[in-house]
Image 1 (cartoon, one colour):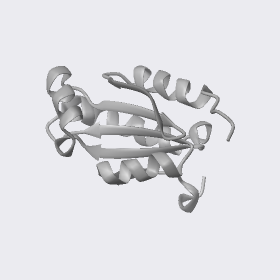
Image 2: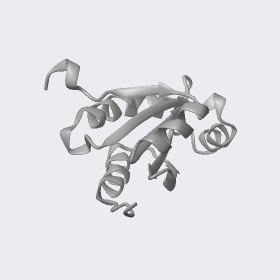
Image 3: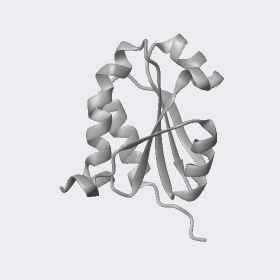
Image 4: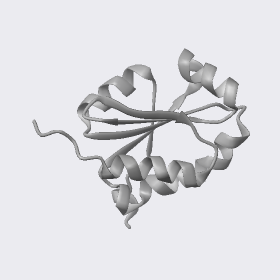
Length: 118
């Protein structure tokens, strides 16, 4: 895959998240923290998922959990990154995940989700 065509992960904040979830059909967001070992462990697989052609229709976002009170609290309780999936601007799932397999399963559910017709 050419570098220019790679989807990549987009860094944003809560305001950007609101815009992205309404501007894109499917969005997968990871709330992360600099002091989170599991976040670091899952960073390479998250980037690989974003570049995987199977997940091309999904927009991948990364947010700093310190800027979101709900994500920050959940990360402190579970010591893991907090993932959220959206379709058509609606929240589908949210959970603190600790393994690459868990992230892939959540992504696969988002990929398989059939949106409502406009």
